[in-house]
Length: 169
Image (cartoon, rainbow, N blue to C red; front, top):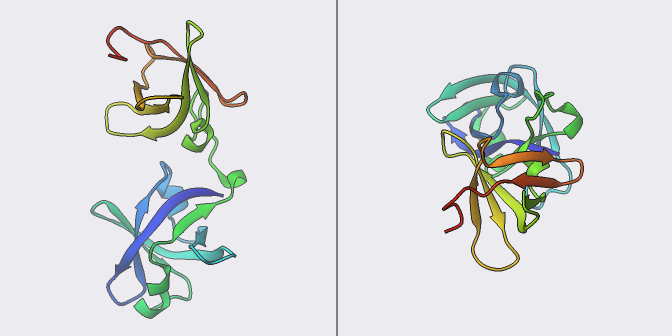
């Protein structure tokens, strides 16, 4: 299952919840009638929820679910993750990847030096940043720009990068 949102709190008393979006496809994932699975710690089975309404509010998506009409119905969902199955993911354009496909890839320079394993993709603004965990030492931060990231092969879990002068200093 793939994370599309994190349920952070309730909103008001009519069963609305605040969700931090973790998808680029909010208009599809959070539209009325969409089905999401709620995964919670200490709950062995995901709960299927159908969206009754959705609206944007500040940095949150506010959702209500069918059959959940009061704060008492949704209070227990706080801290849960909203997920979809991998086969329900949107198809991406060529040379575009989901973050879960990238995490765990071996990162190697165009000179053949193994830098480590991609552990996280940060999204600070202008471009993404790959966080690489080397075998020893502190994390390496690589900008996701064409001059630096030369090839991504998610099938073989390998990313080829070019280290520009001053990047590792």
